[in-house]
Length: 508
Image (cartoon, rainbow, N blue to C red; front, side, top):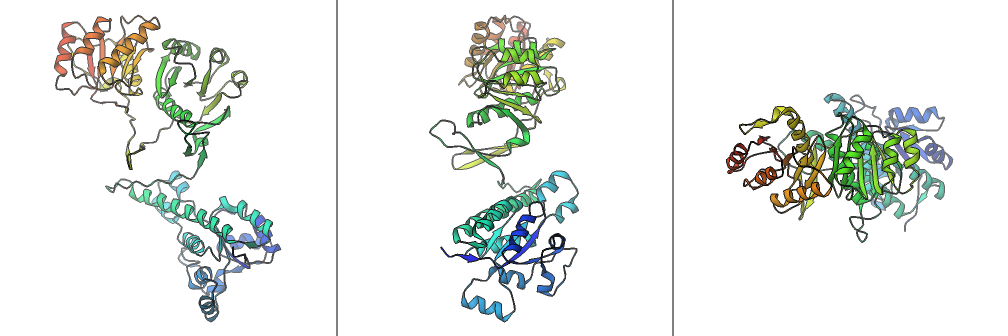
């Protein structure tokens, strides 16, 4: 592969952090440096020789810095192929060859995240920098490009190892990284301008990725594209797997509903909530959540909304689990749980859920609003002659949250803010209800006085009939069936109360 020596460099960067060692190395190997503005001043302060781009182009930086490097004497030196016809033109127009381009773009995404000031955001759209990156990457056969501060270390190692020489493989790898940077940048800008328009374009740019132990099964490879550390501090345990991520996501989604509530614990298995309870203390919330289904809890995901204390940790430590998630861990609780080196302990920073979600389907992607609707008492429409009591309303709302996070068809049975029975992923709603009743009885719960929630309407009155025979006298459902009145009539005839929300919560 063609080996090239770096003799000249153009440096124009936003972030100067980590740049000094590169400048020292370029100075050491005799590279002539061109630069502009703040970068030029930074290099001068280091005492290193630097030539201003303005002296090359004979034009000053103009329009408040919007135009500095956009000139044939800059881009000619970058884009010229090192062959006779192009080199002849460089000589004719007194354009120096530029062998290395170092750029770090204006922080557009960070600016969007930190301000609503449109003027400030627009000024962080880099024009010259992105053009330099694309030009240098296009001409990778002759030019080296470092497209962001993330590549400073890579470039420095390359300079030290090869003393200013590079081969085509080196340059092509940096070109690949350069187009990754430029494509990410353009997507971020597009999404900013596209927000709120009718243009349904699916464009996402995720900068971080982590290779997983494996995918859904050991014979499948898996990669997570996202910033796990933005949401969690991983305090211990084995690397996160694909299935861990899916379950962790489900756990965060349900606990988001209780982030400001009294102490609440949830236990999940294969994304479904098999234990959920709210109590005056975290210890009692854990005990009641576990009582919902202490069999399915084996190997599950445990999540709570308060700092995990030692007494609760001692109980958790008696079980085999995959992940424990909490806003914090008391020191003695952490010391105890961290003794099991493979168990994953996560400190959650924020119960944040993206407002949009997407998944791959067939030969494309479906994107939708996340289901962030949580029913409150004001959302409830009483459909029956009998109104639910205040206590029943509390349980109905708790049940509505519970069923929202079960795979459809879903039924949740709740009593005293405790999930006592759940049925999910069934082909019929009756099957889901029967599953919920069977589970509740298997774990010793008395259904008398419990309430029932359904994630979608009842197409027939059979579910309310079955529920009533088990002692359930209050029901919450979205409504919307052409046969709603049949279910209402059954409730009225049997002293049951039913409220409708108007919101279906299918989870496929």
